[in-house]
Image 1 (cartoon, rainbow, N blue to C red):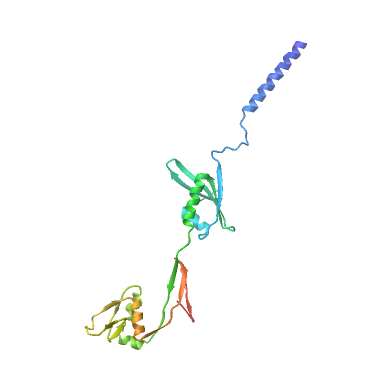
Image 2 (cartoon, rainbow, N blue to C red):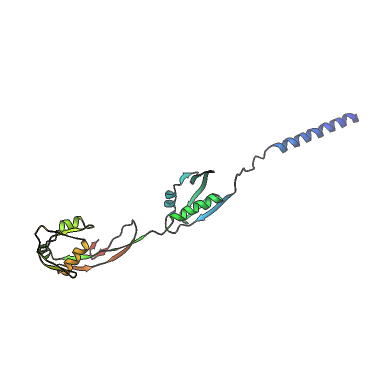
Length: 215
């Protein structure tokens, strides 16, 4: 009887040991698998909107956010990009070296836009006097950014040079629009009423209000 009890006890011990070994060999179902430590950083643009930056860098939609990928000799690299419009933030996550590369690219795009100063001369012209000196209005208006043909019929002063009508009527002298304005002003044909200036951003529209007219 005692021998039978001992045999049963040994059998139970062996079964318990085998069960413990089997449990130890099972992989943990909840253990996460990671290949590299993730790094997260935020960038707050100063000049360019976040979504415009993502468009320029070529980020594509992925998993509710955006992904930026590029190739190097050692393989493909990826970073995850998220935008917080309310806080004006770009959240960048990925391997630390890739995150640094992405942030450097974003910083290169987020630069202050160029500013342009525009001066507009508002001129009142005596059309009768203008005809006498042969100003070709059609040419002036069609080619305002190039030189314009100026047929002159009277003597007049331009700076310190006297231009006289001793050439044939078909002769022409090439002037810029600015030259024409100064000639008309010195000849008493035109009066510069106002010369406002406006500062605007490159590739942005701007308008000037002079009385009831918008230039």
